[in-house]
Image (cartoon, rainbow, N blue to C red; front, side, top):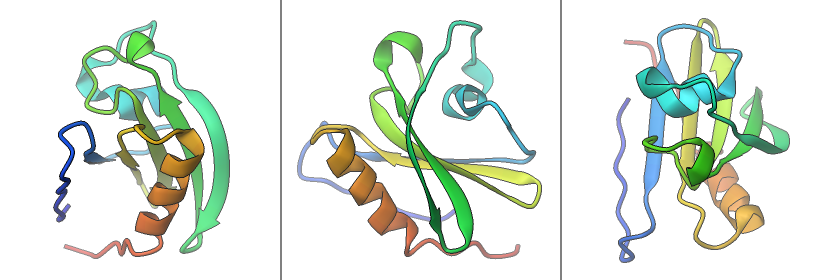
Length: 113
């Protein structure tokens, strides 16, 4: 994955990840290898972007402790055998963060190695 994240605010940042296999449980993507049984995310919407069915989840700090996605709205989608996640820190409210994520995803392109 290639990208950059810059912000004038230390509390705003972008996290992105990809799994080498399909993940049906969004908490597994949000928490990665640090996943634990109590991890929970909240579905906040879904949309089709670039032909991908994308689901938006809010990852509360309380149920995603230690995750880079804690307090983020995470857009999760699967293409082929890979599941992807991308999301901004939720500093402006969930709806505004979803809109930021959607704008970003409209410009994401997956490329072959």
